[in-house]
Length: 233
Length: 233
Image 1 (cartoon, each protein chain N blue to C red):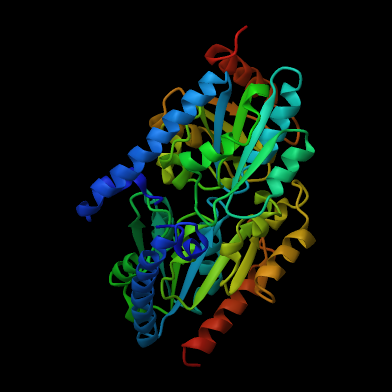
Image 2 (tube, chains in turn orange, purple):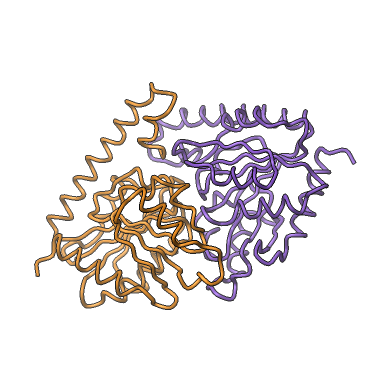
């Protein structure tokens, strides 16, 4: 399920048609989700990252910054538990937990179910926190406007070279935990060269949820994107 | 492919038999790999972790510490590239790269292919660095003696609660990057409580590849395990 279109390069070419059908079904439902968001005038963001890169921290800091500017709902995807949903609810956001039952990614059907449980008429922005994983989520579009990948400094500077699929087809990149730069080996130039090859000119936001550095640039850009797409000025 | 046995809890119960067959095939080949390792008197270790938790760093530090005690070969699993294999080769280890072509885990067939390319007669230990992923690799046994999960401090203390499958069925746990404890929020007691529920009494080694703290305890234990299993004193 996770390998998606990569199987077109596989030796077992007989499996290609099956995989393509699965992807088409997902894409069709993703398109339906996109239409619903558009109709409800809600901007959708799909956050993808390694486990522990800071998806929830970025989300909570973004909510704080957007208070009074945009009304946010949250969809939390996890293999198990509801830790992040509890955090989102505690922060005052409508939130829906999707437990994937061990699946390594959300898909458009799970997204559709989750959207049906959010008060879309009262929201401007829906943020999806995908399952922590640098491979599988990239192959399943959910119907959001923005696909965002979060890298983090302690993960190391080689991630674009090892997980190229996660860096292609994204519209924004956050480089989180820049406060840890003095304490870990991380060559920013090497990292960004890898990203540039895969996704030239991607909107990139280095920031720290601990110190707050860089958060304004990210949240201002996000508001701008949301307004440009769907929210009437 | 990644969801493995979790599908037994799924709504789409018609898929269960298929998934069970896939797992059985994998397990059969894993058993064959295990027999080969046993016959060649080689101890096998399967390292699993998030992307960037420090699998390669732990591996290289372990090699350094075991020089003259055990002869190590390496199997590197990555969706793309050969960065880690280049590092292992540069450190003087026989190493085989397995590119999964986007798959989120190694399986027993890939392991079998890789083993056939290593000089097993000249080795005491084969270390497999699985794809960086906290979900999929746990469902595919490779035939190693030891399944090791590496957690790292900056990933946060909630990982056992969110990714329980990765903490069950492992025989050892390394808690890496403890040198970063002063700089990030991480409640060691909360983390270890989560682990204890899933895998009571698992052998646990907090360490830092940057400072070297804790490395001796880990490598001494590993040598002991290897000797106890297969290497004649």
